[in-house]
Length: 512
Image: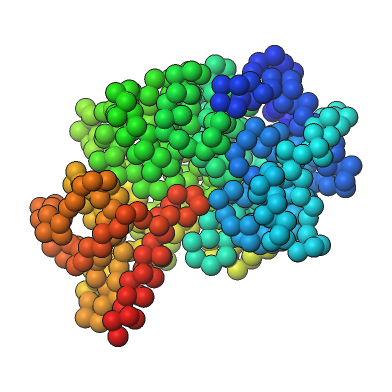
């Protein structure tokens, strides 16, 4: 089903409901939102853009993003969201690889992109310019183009931490499955709720628009266009019943700000966290400071937000005999998928054993865009091989260990960096930490920890050594600590361990 039909239905049922906000300023009702999207769809059709054609969106968070997105789907075309934090040359590569027929952008990014794109590339339409305003005012399409369940809908490019990013092909069925699972496994959405887009709308945050469209709820883009902890806390109080997606680093900053202000996040109803490891110490403090507002999702671009879920009751529970293990898990399989832990040959492992997490079901992608080799490697026998290592307990709770490529093999023993990171983060002076393997002629690899202390605080290697020796086996203890101001992260906020490994390799070469 075409999601533009969901918007059309919402506008028909609740035309006067407030839909789009910039901060606390109302920008459009549902009737106005749907009218703009239908006009944009008609204008795209007039340019010859229709079913199967790709339209890229390269802009900072703004309400026009949703109008353009639903305009693309009105025309039956495929949306290609591109993170606004990417370099224009990276965005240009994605646009070329996708074969985009048109690009929606803003003035600043559009000007930068124009310099990076070849002359024959797709035209750029600024959402701040007259052309976009004219598209919104165009005679609207009477109804969205029909889409079957296999129709391509969203072409999402992976973050590209190794090599060029791959285009994940998501269908109408994939998006519908993800959307309906949210209501069953994650959270209910009500008419009085508001989706707050503080993380990039091109990524996880943007995926939550569907649930709020279906309920005729509000959509809010902060005036800053991004994540500012103080602004988020103020918007929660001003708007009420706010739900948002946040990467773990964002949760950490939000909790710090709330604690400093003596607040508990009033008005923030649900904070869905995903996109990286949430360490036990951080989520314990988050619930202590802000209460039972947190829900965890585990997914990938290849199975968007749709592998497992840990509901707020599990996140906040401190009474169940296994509450701590569950808090450290990513929850249980969502309703539309099956999840297994398997060995290298694909054999299912018994509860408690570590292997690769695989998933199959209606939320799993159709494949990679123009990349049959990568598709065949990742989709095997109907299962998506996630590349994530984990274990499942007898109750079905899945606990992530690490990406398979991040596992450290030292002296023939597997060491999972997250286990070491969890211990180091319990030190009160440690703000962030990332553990990687360094090649070693004797052991194969040795453990190295990159540590970012809290501002104004210091910690010594001896203190961290003592902490590790209290909690984990001696062979897992880091052989070296590297103290840094911040850890390198990509445009999605994920720590770039490949950059840390490259730094160690460079230092090794310098020593020769």
